[in-house]
Length: 56
Image 1 (cartoon, one colour):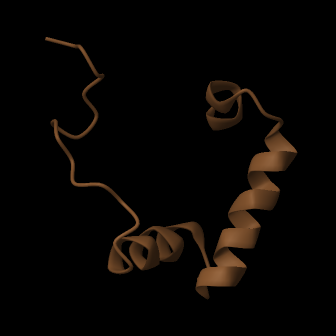
Image 2 (tube, one colour; image 1 turned 60 degrees about the vertical axis):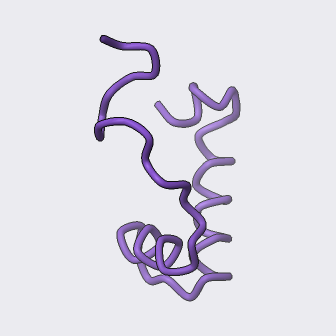
């Protein structure tokens, strides 16, 4: 689903996630998200979790 939304192949997503995990020293996807949060790589959420932009 992520690959489709980005318009790239599934394997490309796997490779990029793997590269991020390696560079950030994460051992799994959850750890990768936690590490990215620690480093401030996420923008502050401006809407409710899971809400679609423009949804009412």
